[in-house]
Amino acid sequence: MSSLFDLKGQTAVVTGCSTGLGVQMAKALASQGANIVAIARRKEMIDAVAKEIADTYKVQAVGIKCDITDTLTVDAVVKEIMQKFGRIDILINNAGTGAVAPAEDITDDQFYNEVNIDLFGSFRMARAIAKQAMIPAKYGRIINIASMYGLVGNKVAPCSPYHAAKGGVVNLTRGLAAEWGKYNITVNAICPGYFYSPLTKETLDSDFFQQNAKTMIPLSRYGNEGELDTAAVFFASRASSYVTGVILPVDGGYTCM
Image 1: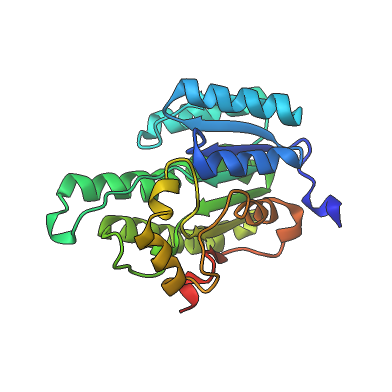
Image 2 (image 1 turned 60 degrees about the vertical axis):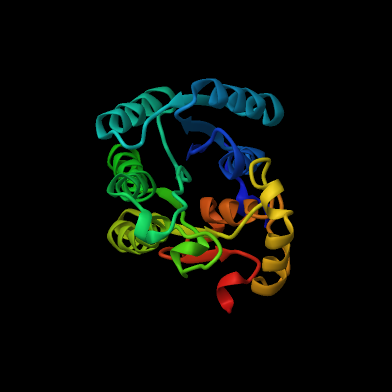
């Protein structure tokens, strides 16, 4: 059974791979043998991530700076990856942002920026990688990181542009799955809830958020490091060969209520 999750020799591109969940998922794929291309805007951080992954998991790993809001840059980066590795088997669209403010105070620029990064950025990466790598190979695994807030609203952190963009990612996933299935490309989405990271620990441990977890989450807690990894590995692997267009919340049950 373990061979179903074997990713040896495959190349995985992970965007937003300088910190947090992107790094965790990249390490999870590397632990199964995948070579990793860490994509983000901060070159020194992705280089450090790539070195750690290469040293720890004994796979090839590189960091490539990329602004996913620029189509020409995205196309050039995908070409560079293909020249280096000759293949791209897996894409995790993890890069994103989040404007938190009451809807009536959100500016046009904030709304546009959110959609441009979270939704259009995911499409740019998927389009370029499908066209240059996956469609010619008749194989691919695309994993879009949406959010539980792409499925429901919330009263804790007002972020209507984020809801809109991540909701778009959810249905973009279905659209691409329907269109690219004929090329043996699966497209699925993970909708994480709140997860602990160095940036979120203080907030999530506050009295307000701890009470929110007990009230709103059936498991009465927030996600820990590693609890998103198995979903990513499953969608990236041969084990999910008949799974496409699926929207998987990993949220402790938040969206079941």
